[in-house]
Image 1 (cartoon, rainbow, N blue to C red):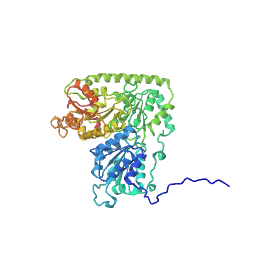
Image 2 (spheres, rainbow, N blue to C red; image 1 turned 90 degrees about the vertical axis):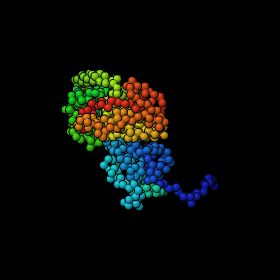
Image 3 (cartoon, rainbow, N blue to C red; image 1 turned 45 degrees about the vertical axis):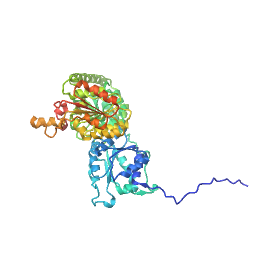
Image 4 (spheres, helix red, strand yellow; image 1 turned 180 degrees about the vertical axis):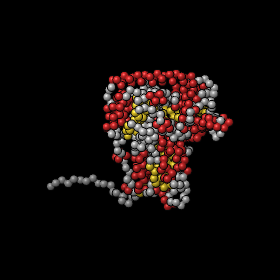
Amino acid sequence: MAKMLSVPSQPAVDVSAPVKKLSGGHLVAKALRSEGVDTIFTLCGGHIIDIYDGCIDEGIKIIDVRHEQVAAHAADGYARMTGNLGCAVVTAGPGTTNAITGVANAFRAESPMLLIGGQAGLAQHRMGGLQDLPHVEMLRPITKFATSVPTTLRVADFVSMAAREAFNGSFGPVYLEIPRTVLDHEIEPERAVIPQAGHYRASTKSVGDPNDIQRLADILSKATKPCVLLGQQVWTCRATETAREFVERLNIPAYMNGAGRGTLPPDHPLNFQLTRRDAFEAADVIVVVGTPFDFRLRYGKSLKAKTVVQIDMSYATVGRNRDVDLGLVGDVGAILAAVTHAAGGNKDAAAARNAWVAMLREKESAAVEARLPKLRSDARPIHPYRLAYEIDNFLTDNSIFVGDGGDVVTFAGNVVRPKAPGLWMDPGPLGTLGVGTGFAMAAKLAHPSREVVALFGDGSFAMTGFDMQTAVRFGLPYIAIVGNNSYMNQIRCGQIQKYGKERGDVGNYLGDVDFEKFADMLGFYGEAVREPEQIRPALERAREAGTCAVINVWLDPDAYAPGTENQTMYK
């Protein structure tokens, strides 16, 4: 007779126990966690509080700021620093409109951030509910994707949809409006489908047409005077090592802008900065990687070479404003790697190229030497070049530099050299003032072990600087250097040129503000600097303080950067 198997007794199931339902806010948090979001930047509002409750359960950090513009800039900055989706959550109406500037900045800078905005309940649609505005229509022109979420069942699906759009082609911001009733409503867990990021993302490492890879390899192998401009997307694609190998293997002089700065270290023999105009006018081949033909390149007119090649993540960008001889669309790192692998040698071209590099290096060295007296100027009031020079020497191999200002950052852009990739942040082509506070917090949050140094104009610091208190609350110290000349000087220069000295100060005079006293109120380090030789000691004291710090440096209001004097941004 067969032996009967004993079956372990099972605990009784309480079929009457209710299944815990999930609210829309909790579904948002679960979907964000699925997309790799570990932090949201926010300012509270009644429409969005259920998202906070969900974030607590999902272990998502909540950084609450004092102005929604700062939340949006911080989400933008966090995306740039981490390479992941940045996220800001704001309430409806003025909460969303306050964040619009940050979204617009991310749009021009191709930064993948998600803005979630509240809205009145569906039952009050078009009834004039509290803070009800047509948010989607307002955000659509400055996002890659903008929509309202119609039902709690689709909340997680829409978050994932928005995230995919943020990383589709060239990156950019996306917007979701979620009515309060959709966030507060609860549904059974099995009714909510939450896509898992690792299970639906496609590969984005496209190299485009292989024939064009070989065409570019052949062009560069024969070129005797090539150069390359490495832009934002080199960092976006985390392609700095690949770009460096491309430059070194092919022996190509490299110029960098935006977040492309730092791709090569300052002392690299193929890193050039001050001779870009010379190179662009004399080169036989120019390769522009990951930066558009916008005002920074005079809409393509700066590119004088017979052969111009553009590599970009977006098909829409290639050839915009200027015809190109060859355009390649895809992941810029994958394309550069493929071209490096395909390129062959040409002895005659190689010899000529060595002479080309040597000629540019001689010009570069001469330009550096000619500028040194201004960089080391002992003039009083302090010359902005001296401040930029001191900052450049103060930064370590581990320092992240943030630039937020007009003329003072224009000076710094020609002097401050990040020591490695990912150590430079600026607004990007929209030229937004006020980004620095959010960027600095985001950089410190993303890289707690790195020092963060932010250079502000006095105008830009006053816009969002009060959120340094947020950095203090969350233990995110950084050094804020205020280049204080009491004016919006980039605008003032143009006004004086156009209307004369007697009307040059209209609408741009800010007054003399002792920003170092701001630190006393909030309990961190502050110091004013009026003598050039005191800049470095003051910065060292700020570093030693280990807290947030404001160093208020009084600058010569009648010193203007060359680009400002020539009004190049308007040409």
